[in-house]
Image (cartoon, rainbow, N blue to C red; front, side, top):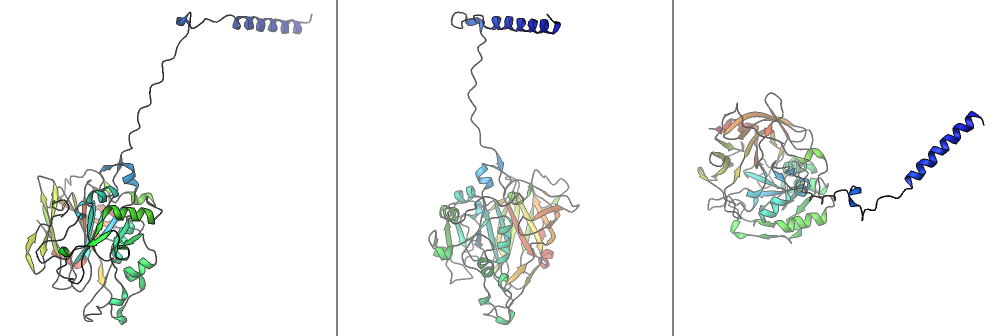
Length: 397
């Protein structure tokens, strides 16, 4: 026999031997339980807790659905009642509030209150809701928020020879589909008129109060996209802890908004050391030395904020009032693609800042004077946009 054949036979013999061993009788687990390793039972799966996420408007922790759902903004009246109180219905619950001039002929300011869905549900009602203006629409679009209003600015109100283009007015932007909105007056199903809130200035209009649940239901039924369009809009500020160690004393700031004429709005924010928040006050039309503290009618609480911004902006009138042709009327405010300076107040201190806006598809960004992104404390925020001529009237104590 050749060596190669012998080698193959040897290999086959070894394989057969291993086969016999493997076929030998194995221990019976029932008669010999100790001979078999029994694996421990798999642990029951732990319940998965909701992923903690950040409220895009306040920086506080919230549930994931609320954090990813588009906010809702409301145009709010700021014309004072004769009885001396600002009408606050529910919007004291808004996480983010903007205020600025409304017109150049003596119509004071208007407010835009922005809510996450959870905050809006907690508010219950919001009002009084008033008409749209282009610059507020831009601020809402920057946050990818739904925009709720009652009426809009339009060229019919201006002297024909001075009228701007269609998109200089809210009506033109609304007709172009500029942003997702809800016109309360056209629907008339989820709002009601409250004569007790009648304006001191515009006595022919009765304020509209919106039902929060109805607004949310309408928006979800009408618009297919209820989550954010891009990541940049998922946070209004760069949130974090900021004690303003090198800040100046800023325990109060008094703001005068309009430079145009005798009728203007003046408000202030005074720091309350016990709560660590700023309380918003307002001075009455007709008696600018009389200060009132507005209270939310739904909660009975004052208007309080962790953060207060004053942004210096370029504002200018561009047409004339058709009722009083000698008066300037509608205004523009440079926002998208603009930049400027401002002030940031928190913890009873303030620092000077700069702000910059790349487009209307992302929020305004804020920076320190040295150019670093500004860290904003978590909490509710009030942003005042003043005319550049009004900066010299700021009173900071």
